[in-house]
Image (cartoon, rainbow, N blue to C red; front, side):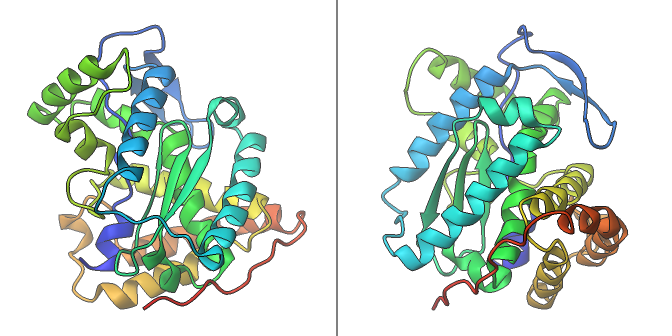
Length: 286
């Protein structure tokens, strides 16, 4: 599939509907002030994220990279983004996460995701789009925000997955007490389902929120936030016949770039107070 579809869709992070738990209710996004209806607890999200992550890593169709040239830059960027998250307005959530990152050796898949609890994966196919560690920080910052902001739980709480949601609830409930395998519907909702690299799209507001806070995290981590604009310019060049924004569940590349430029002064003000992080070129892929 085309790179723009694989990355820009983001990942549907979590399933909700296990019931009205102690962690449910309305919350306010600390960056945008947007009200969010959340009907699942953070602990339930983290449990499901950990189960899905384990299944991804044990999927025989996937191969984890063993090349230090691919692993080390991802780990460097992840470590800085995580520390920035722990200083952010999501600090309480970030401190709860059990962070982990895996590099998946798949040069044809331009993809990355973050699951509830801080479980992350980066496909080597994203390297040409990111180009540098600063570009990768834009990618990982964006994905981490989806997890920190609980976008997946919000989507499920809004009832955006109807029949699939009911199936997911059953699958989640059956695994609640242990480490059993998540059902196919649950894995699909988590964004790492049967078809490797195919991710369920977030709404435009979620994608824009992840873009906005993502560049703030990248800047706080010491990476030039302007690399996010360069990243999406490259995505636009590759996408070719991308659908119009009206027909898409995520912003068009042009809208994303316009928004990123609008937010850039705020991100640059943060970046200019930090020691610049290394921004070496990422390794080439086939």
